[in-house]
Length: 137
Ligand code: HEC
Image (cartoon, rainbow, N blue to C red; front, side, top):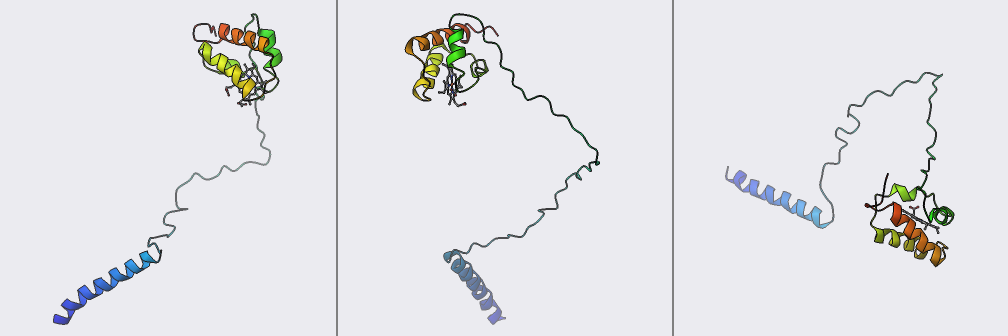
């Protein structure tokens, strides 16, 4: 009995030493078994018959008409060089200063070739139709 009492702490110490040695050597203990992976219930795949057909709707190419007004022609000629003008009504109503910054970004950051005078008229057009105060639709 005496020996057994000494044996238990010695065994614990040995186990602890082993764990610490493994940690020092970079070994991380853990359970890496797959567990329930693959056992998750899933619906059975639909069995298709050989003659299935399916329909896909038309690709949405709709570009809304921009409101009429001075500067619209300039927008249509300069702003569609790189992307559709859908980008304009797609934005939420933006403050006037933001539209000015937006046009400047197209010119300075993305390299849009827009003469200064035309850029001013484009900004005025955008501000006249696409700010929270001026946007109608
Ligand atoms: C030189 C190419 C070019 C031209 C010209 C151009 N844009 Fe852009 N525009 C971009 C690029 C690049 C992006 C950002 C990438 C994307 O979303 O396709 C962009 C994005 C936008 C966006 C989305 C918001 C944003 O900042 O990303 C708006 C609005 C926009 N352009 C408005 C205009 C207007 C108004 C004009 C005419 C003054 C214009 N663009 C002309 C290249 C151009």
